[in-house]
Length: 273
Length: 249
Image (cartoon, rainbow over all chains, first blue to last red; front, side, top):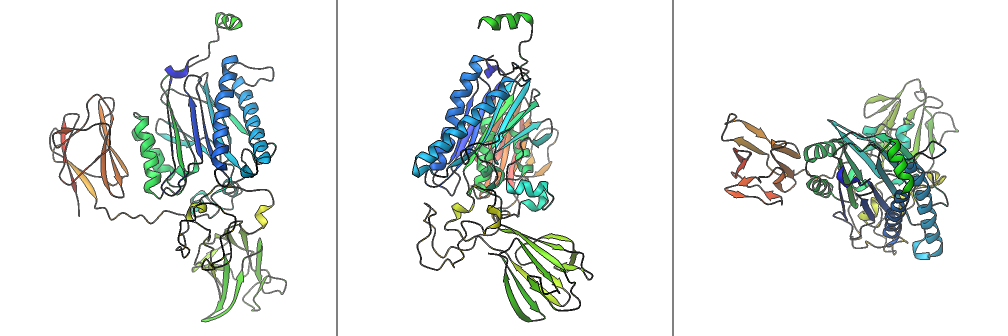
């Protein structure tokens, strides 16, 4: 199914106001209904290499996977093809970056965070590793859908620190999981229901460290009619507040329902595809 | 490295760097910071340090632990906090990470298991004035050596000296009404018909078209899709309503 008709997607990435290089990478495939945001790390330009590899690889491999099979089709284990593909391709990206880092001395230690979302069958399947986030604006409610894999989040979860105190922490930039650092990595993958009118915001920590959630909510809420302007505004706010890190956003607005074809006829036709 | 400075009345007694994950405070000799005074419990309190953050926890002491005059059980220490135990005072001096450049400060790093017990990786303890070449950290060497200490994250002190802007409706049913533009974004118009947004930025107010076939008109001139800076007494027409932008003092 061509998702262009039901999704409007805007991607934007900016080096910020301090750094000269951009280690973030973003990509979207509006036709297949998925988007990827990566925030690279590592010396010299290795961070860019890692995040670039992640978005490029996922872009081609997920497209292939979803041409071969509908993302919502179920496999024998009861998982959707979207989930299976995300798990498989994120593992593959991890292995590829890890190998590249081992084989090329200038890439040693490179890695990236990752947040990937696949829209299918009135749902979104979200996979993430690290502290890049996905937020959802629905009605009047702005909520964070992903939970960071970071030291700070672990401290919040264990009750050591409250989320109000968290903004004063000196340990903001430490992730506990990243792609390409170890031979294997556990991606966190979940399904969420989607309603027409929802707006999804993917962002790197360069946005949410500089702009607090209330301001993000207000901006997405006020400008959801014009995603281009909304993306520009979000990046501008991060830069106005210091822009100490690269800032990337992907905005996805859901224009209508997109149920998977379920009738016997659709399934019958699918046989011949 | 963060540290505690122990003092009594006006005399400074000791400086204790927080190198361990747990630094215990109490009257008994096995404590890391021993204070031999009957007002202090045997095991009085502990400071837990995780990389660059430190937390104080009272261990159920008889006389309690006070921070900046308030009794606490558990407290996230901030630079300058004063811990009071009986007549003794411990001042917490938080570490302001002294990295080679401000850009590295925000750099995302992976935390490997076990790393939490070591001091933060990229924080050399030598004073920044030392002329030694910076260690392995690459790039961004543009910052001057005597770079001012970074304020702890929070909000950059960008407190804009921008005068507050407001709009006054000039025509229609609401003529005469005034609205202050205190938020960073204020939307105007009717959703689905014509909407514009006024953004409050550190260096001024800007109006931008959001949706609708017609673009807002400023001083008789229609805008394009770009943000347009607003000057004092600009007249904006939007969805059939005229309004004036002005700056308050």
